[in-house]
Image (cartoon, rainbow, N blue to C red; front, top):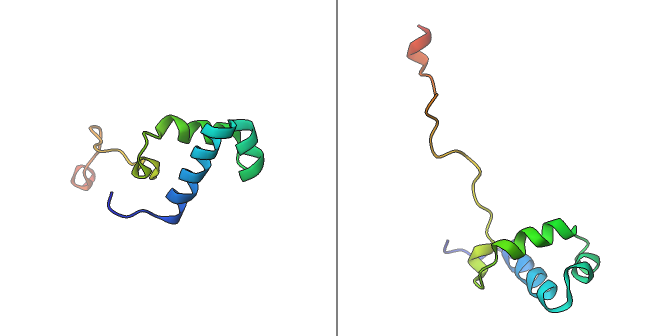
Length: 71
């Protein structure tokens, strides 16, 4: 991903604070749940681009039906 968004910068500061001061303290400071913070810490690999949202859409759907099947 080429673009670094404000939300990625926010999550970066959140993760770095949590790694330095602990998740509970970061949770209180940023008003986010601990599970949210653990989710982003798990995904964080040192690069800010790792904190981007990933699409949850399926890449393929093998059981998909065509409109032609219904005609």
